[in-house]
Image (cartoon, rainbow, N blue to C red; front, side, top):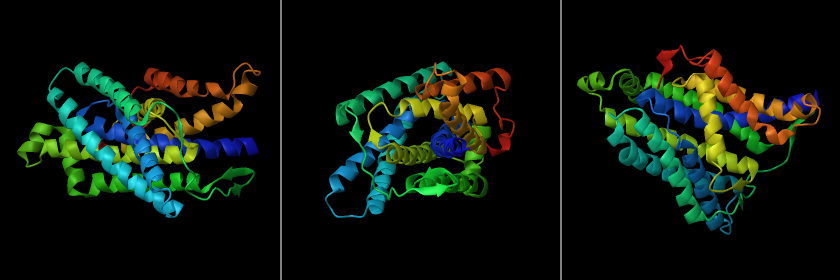
Length: 307
């Protein structure tokens, strides 16, 4: 029972990080029907930017929580500028092109960002300092630390904020109108280009947040760290119903729990043939199952919530 509870907690934390990235995927898809495969690399840039700021300020005598906030703000600014530039330079000229063209461009952008990051930060894996108290809290027989509690809280607050933004604000109404029909929205006074840019900037902020949380939780950063979380977050977005904000969070959390439980019990289930290092297969098994049985995802029919 202790192992089960611990794996559920681990899954909720992992799933929360997937959910933050999946929200970026689903917002962009909801607006322009683009699967932005470079989104995972924006997460990586956010984490590496945060690491750089922490290294520069580590001798300034600042408390760890303040250092984390400063590095997070720097990561958000860098990622927002990067994603704005990506949309303007790589995706906007292809907006009316066949759908395969921007998809391939997104894959190319992913590889380009990885290469540039390797040149700037070098390919070695770097330790990310422990900035928050690491004292454990006990829940039943399971353990959770301050960073993991912060990740769970930040994800809940972020989802609530995004739901308010999309459903209650002028920008949210413009986003929903652009998602329905950009040309008609333009006739009604909405500026689709501005709305799309704002969507990419918000998505970048979410990716930066996820990148910093990921680095703080696992304690390492490197130039390829965004690929697998990005792919799993895409799986989570499809699982929940891509284009649906609540679906992205539900998909992310469920995927994280499935992966953690699978990782904890895969050895027992296979008689020791497979170990926890094969936990990634659960995410992609879920993707195949969802695309086969319910391609619209768990909440895919709730199009009214589309960003």
